[in-house]
Length: 456
Ligand SMILES: Cc1ncc(COP(=O)(O)O)c(C=O)c1O
Image (cartoon, rainbow, N blue to C red; front, top):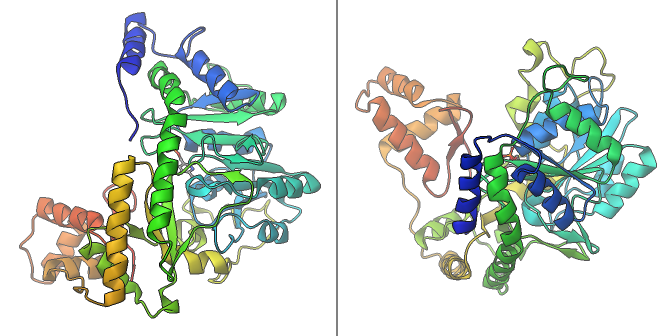
């Protein structure tokens, strides 16, 4: 939905004509940082290449590392990965049942003498209970970090998100409300933290602390300064779209509207509702088939399971596979991540019915109409079962049993079963088709690899 036009082109032309595309005094990066800080009402804004790398600089900036723990949201995996990069143990707090945002009660229960920070995600644009989380952080002398990748200009109690914690980060990748290709900004109201973060993301030739180069370029900033002005207008459209989508399920007793934190203003990103078909005898598989039949492009289940049930967190291949951070000699805790660790997250994740909310009002109306039709079909039971070809079924079986797999590995397995009919390109096309095919059964798991998700 974002629009790009003559303002962005004018700025990009200026960058090219200047012959210097890197951060420079008086350039677009200076302007982007200062406009962003002003508009988000923060003291400092620090620009970076992506949100992931800016976040990777944060443990160092807050003095966290080996032997420490950071409390993370289990629905997404970003902060767990940042922890592993810094030899920190991620500790997973559960989420609330109706808004699936970090539950402060669960956070409080998981604090130990090793906890250095709470990393809250304002998931899909909905503000979490940041006042309470900040109170908990302050009472334990630890940091509150806010991931605002989906939540630019979202508010809690009249204050923009990113200002409740010690540091807030925003992503500008192409899927975000403020897209610049790649790019990110961190905000903070703390002079010391701003300096610590800056030291770690640009090292020049002789670093004073362990740092790297996570720089943004003038190209992103040239687009960013213009997009920043447009985001409030986009959000008005997305908010209207949210109301339209909410009203599509208003009379449906088995799809629950997502709860909002009191006194908050959301910045719609993805629209989500919660499947509770068991209440009315509506089968999950029938609803999936109904969505497909109605041409309603809603995903179900996001990544299905909380981060701690994924292999990368159970057996991280970090630090030369020596078992760190869990077996690190500096770590005094114990990692025991059985199913049931975050029961609410485990229950709610497969129930999430999701679509992008960053669309025009017209597109939101179309989505709402297709969702209404899917509800009608699911309730009537007049639904064609979802079918797969023999080759598709075999691919799904193989990836489920042995995945993640890439197309050449699946092709080899086909050959071993006496089926050599698909070359690598045909197999890639078939697997990509399954990845796009609704309901989603395959997703990317690293370069060229596909993982299986059981969405039934
Ligand atoms: C919640 C959240 N945090 C962080 C990131 C990482 O952002 P980036 O792509 O800028 O590294 C994303 C990206 O999708 C995200 O959704």
